[in-house]
Amino acid sequence: MKQEENYLEINKDSWNKRTASHLTSDFYDVEGFLNGKNSLNSIELDLLGDVKGKRILHLQCHFGQDSLSLARMGATVTGVDLSNNAINAGKELAKKMDLDVQFIACDVYDLPQHLDAEFDIVFTSYGTIGWLPDMNKWAALIARYLKPGGHFVFAEFHPVVWMFDDDFKIIKYNYSNSGPILENEEGTYADKTADIQQDYVMWNHGLAEVLTALLSNKISIQKIQEFDYSPYDCFDHTIEFEPRKYRIKHLDDKIPMVYALLGKMEV
Image (cartoon, rainbow, N blue to C red; front, side):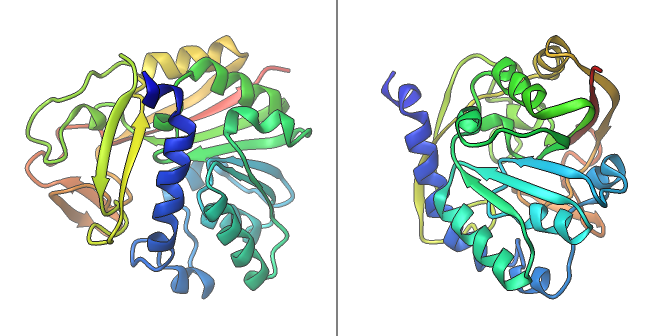
């Protein structure tokens, strides 16, 4: 299938198209961020703990708001993303903020060709693994960069969310990975009125697939949590029931929307 074979090219193009709209969107609020707003949420902050003095690798960082937030908190950060437009934007933000964050533009699977280092923490969050076909390869990469005893911090939208159609009315997709999902989108989750259109290729990954991949690569699970809300208003038909907590209005608290875990690299 041509789309699957060319998924990196297709997805890189889709994220390059999105980046300009994201930089000016209310969703990302770059102005507020530059004025001191921390882009991280309580879900991941609770797992990250005190990051001052820690070396952190941030995988699939988009244009680096979370990378830069971690640097503001005292960490030494390397951010990685497939989109060169996003990475260039991250570098510009780092200059404006006078923060020394290393940004690398590459496919996450190819990172060993660009970076040779060990980190105290590997971090990735929200809408990341769906762009990757192979969870074992992903977990092996995380293990490659974690120092012995280092921690993996992961927050992600729950696989149950990706089973639904955009209106959350019907079950449209498999819970588990059944191959590539080819989609076309007008606008973007951060600005649904944006005058852009893109194709993209994704995969669904159930919890067992993710956990097994991590455990098979000697990353033990210290904590796993599920949340019945999203910290982002990025889906249709949402209601904000508490500040920065969103649910699908007609589903209320009946489905998990996010999960998060803390892993530890075996010594």
